Image 1 (cartoon, rainbow, N blue to C red):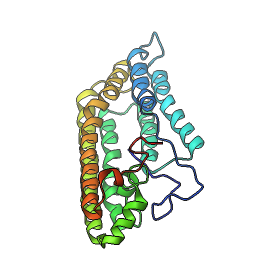
Image 2: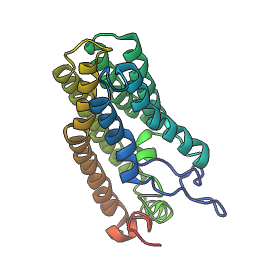
Image 3: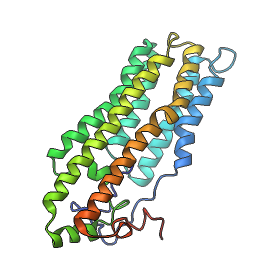
Length: 251
């Protein structure tokens, strides 16, 4: 998910002289957060190898270390990334406590559920979450769009567009919450703290991308399409004028 560039001021325009954040490496994120934990939990949880507790700790260590490294090196953090970090820690804590699988299911559903609620609630604040995720200078050429909105006097229409986009964005997180819960209930059958449970947790982690991430991304792409189409109507700009150079892959 996109996050706001810290080189933007409160109006969303880049501040001259500040360096924009680079996009995270998608392949590296996939390996660190999904592939590595899934392999460790599936292949090294047996008593003759690492054992279930050590395997779980190691499986969760790389995502935690990577998340901490990314934060301290880029200073790039946001509400969603913090929740993701907390989710990893909760997974380790629940595993060590050896609680039933239903608690893991509840945890898996709670994170995107919280994001959905915050997304809707943030519309009443000065910094709605939809602007942090979609309407930011890594996706949209904000100075050009803002100038066109003012020139055409379509600020009211823009507010309505952001509200509709927020609803679709929240729906994507609700879908993620439901799929997370169903997937966890379906897969996590063994007692926590056993090699079998770790293998199931690894399987759930591996399936999270095709089962959860892809459907949620499709809905989020619908939100992006709605936003860009609405901006095109409200501003009179062409799509290539609305999108930022970074989102178009330009230097």
